[in-house]
Amino acid sequence: MAVKLLLTGLPGVGKTTLVKRVMEVLGDRSLGFYTQEVREEGKRVGFRLITTWGEEGWLARVGLASPYRVSRYGVSLAFLEEVVARLQEERSPGKVLVVDEIGKMELFSSKFRAWIEEVALNPAVPFLATIALKSRDPLVVRLKKALLLWEVTRENRDQLSQRVVKLFLRGA
Image (cartoon, rainbow, N blue to C red; front, top):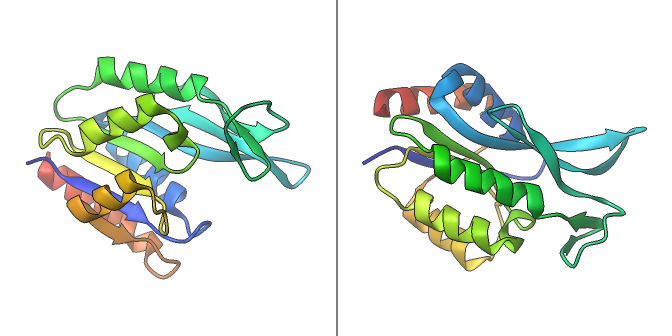
């Protein structure tokens, strides 16, 4: 069975930074995306998805008209669903599928939700994802019970990236 790992922790603890470090070390052995907060004049205005193949697009931003909302952010599913389609096409043996994150914004997409359920539980797919610490979403709860779950803290985040890389390189 392929290595499957979920990283969780409080907001702002460094989950995305950890995932980016792991992706840098794995290089072309990783395939997926991370979510980056966008700031203007020191204020957070939204979130962008950055892919391993160099594309980026909006996930959510202030002022975006959308039926999907999280706090003051309108959520756009278009780019996320394009990324999911490409990941479905490009998945290949030996590549670690990286998803930062399985969160409230992303889970508005039924395509994302179905895809995550498929790949996270597929025993052949090496899978690394970040996931909300306190989510009550049924899929998130199920994944936390089914997969290896490590909590990222301020105390362990620097050492944890090395452990994650070793875990996936051993499992390759």
